[in-house]
Amino acid sequence: MSSIAAADEHVSAAPAKIIQPAWVRTMHWINAIAMILMITSGWQIYDASPLFGFSFPRDITLGGWLAGGLLWHFAAMWLLMVNGLAYLVTGLATGRFRRKLLPITPSGVSHDLKAALTFKLAHDDLTVYNSVQRLLYAGIIVVGVLIVLSGLSIWKPVQLYWLVSLFGDYPTARYVHFFCMAAICAFLVVHVALALLVPRSLRAMVIGR
Image 1 (cartoon, rainbow, N blue to C red):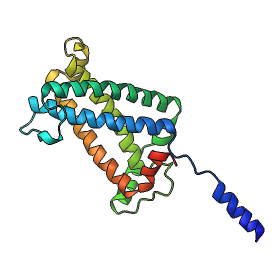
Image 2 (image 1 turned 90 degrees about the vertical axis):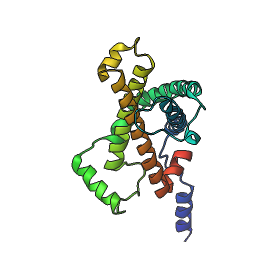
Image 3 (image 1 turned 30 degrees about the horizontal axis):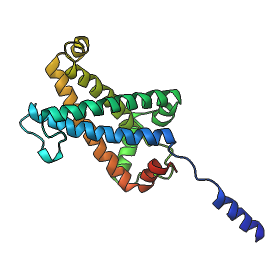
Image 4 (image 1 turned 180 degrees about the vertical axis):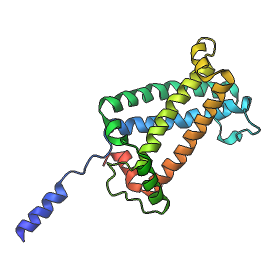
């Protein structure tokens, strides 16, 4: 009995497994704040010259008017760019992206998507991403790069004419920027929904374990 008790005590005293390292958690929440500021201020800027036949409600925009939206947008832009670049460099240098996001296969995505839609997708090991998560996270990184490049094209179309030419022209860069924003918003909805469905993942992103 004493040996069993000692074994139980050893198990209970074992430290919890680190799922999300400190640098990931820090950059994740900085990115979250920067994205919210960028999106809401971007909606304010969009309302000044809409691309489509609708505008965003004033209550969900940031800045109050065009100049205010621009000030918030440019301030958050630097925060997002610096933090995002640091995240990309660290993720590549540590091999985290390779371990977490690869491989991505059509068969794996199809299998895990069917399991997710039927609520049969297991979440026992939070250190391993399923194929749907890998596709979403890899995709949002690509979208993040595109939205930064298209945003720079819109901001400095004359000085960065070569960058504008990669998108074709200035109006096309605006459309790319808008649809990238829409993709990020869709990702955030799915991301938050999954975090609520699997609260342990949200806890891990707060305390790491």
